[in-house]
Length: 460
Image (spheres, rainbow, N blue to C red):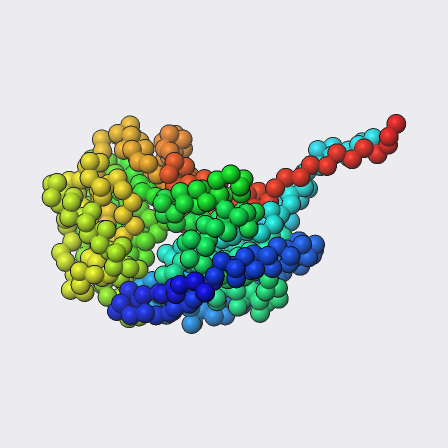
């Protein structure tokens, strides 16, 4: 056996769950079972695979009353928000609905002498390495389309959300997906890297840190294994002078603070036109001051602990450094702030891009707000980042949003919205945010490979 994986609850620091990681030999056997089972799975009719995945999602939804408090104990999200099943159903349902069209043969032409077309064929065995912050929604982004496309899937979940993979596998198996086709596996980092280096997988989808993404690339070096990587982010919001101020404040601050700021596309920096700046800051402070920080199992709690003490320590360090360099904090320390995982959500002004809080990923409940004079300044600041996942633009002018969006180095441009994955659009990023893309038709393209057919009807 490998070493023991432990989920430490951020609520009280206790061990909530533990599982033994697979030995390298047991892990190799799991991958081998997946490879053998994949052939029969891919041979099943597409409609059957779609129906089984839909049924697996429904079975997962039936567990929601258990899942919601379990998530609170594992990673701290308040129970009042009801879990992730709405997003899981939306994303999985959309990918099921578009599967037939997305995976259809591409006809290039046929006449009396030749037939030409391109098929989309599954890679084979797909490893999904999922994160803890939205453990069900991020996993379903790849699990559902990978299975529908005819791949077998091994799901390795983050230790912080140790039980999520078990629940997903249980639901899909109960719905009829063969156990060898969809396996939850407990792997440590070394075993994962060794399997990738041994080419146990044909495609790896990883959501996590930049460092984790580099480790994936290093493990895959020379194997030609395909990688899909969603890594860090430092997503900006830009409030233009014609924006709906009330809506901008409500959406951007929620995007910065929801889930204790632990969102892949959470808002981490806000640029506000000078004509609205003072009013924006005043309203934003009022919103955050009204939050209740506390036990996520309490229905009155708005914001729970961060998922781990070390994550909170990094956010505190960024805030403290910014304050030492002249930033201003607007939110008084909340009673539940214990100096550990429970962290007062914070708004900072008088910030600059010389400060880590405006440059490094925070992944916590803090946002810096800066005054800007025009689009040029805002674009320059939004692009002054090593990351590029989403950007949120606030204006009444759609053509202006398109012009600004065309110049922002990002994967998704939002107008008058933030912190949302539309499954009809490709979820992707640029720069150190990663490469590849999930969801949409393009998500299917990344989980399959093209295979061309040139069929000559006669030898004459």
